[in-house]
Length: 83
Image (tube, rainbow, N blue to C red; front, top):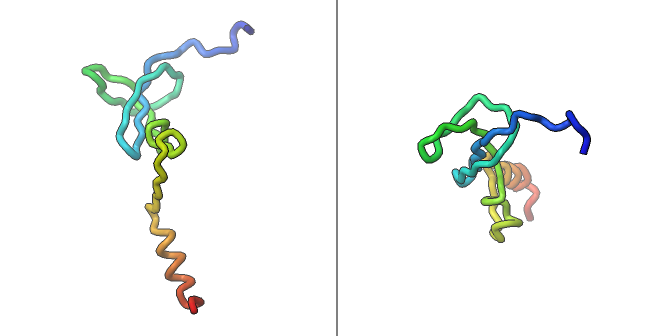
């Protein structure tokens, strides 16, 4: 293994899945300005949209997210062409 190419500043970081509020701790060098308290200790926080706890491949559940109403906009836009 080459010397000097790996970061030295590994620390425990909390990763939070924003779709289901699941939090897990792992070592990382990710920079963040937010913190979260887990089990009485404060850790740097990295927010994620999807993780192993919410991804359909790992959970076996399909989940449709339509936060912007894009499906409804599409249906309304093309409703005039409907026979």
